[in-house]
Length: 104
Image 1 (cartoon, helix red, strand yellow):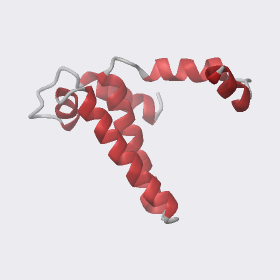
Image 2 (cartoon, rainbow, N blue to C red; image 1 turned 90 degrees about the horizontal axis):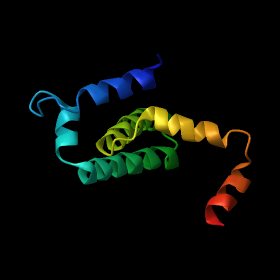
Image 3 (cartoon, rainbow, N blue to C red; image 1 turned 90 degrees about the vertical axis):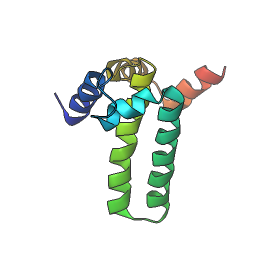
């Protein structure tokens, strides 16, 4: 199991935890909309790091983005495996072709 899979499993295990004992449980208890809002905030912070060319900040914020993405997915009962399956289904397809298929 890699670090992302371990993190996703930890997040899943916290879905029914006491919000007073876990930051993840607290986020999830606030509902999917709040999880999405927090993901958006972290994404913006990563963008700022990228635009400023701050490699250290970008790395740190990217880790936060991945965490909050997994929390947001868990809030809507979408698993990392679901996302990986979707990516696998796109393998071998040009990004331009895949985008055209979604817009067509």
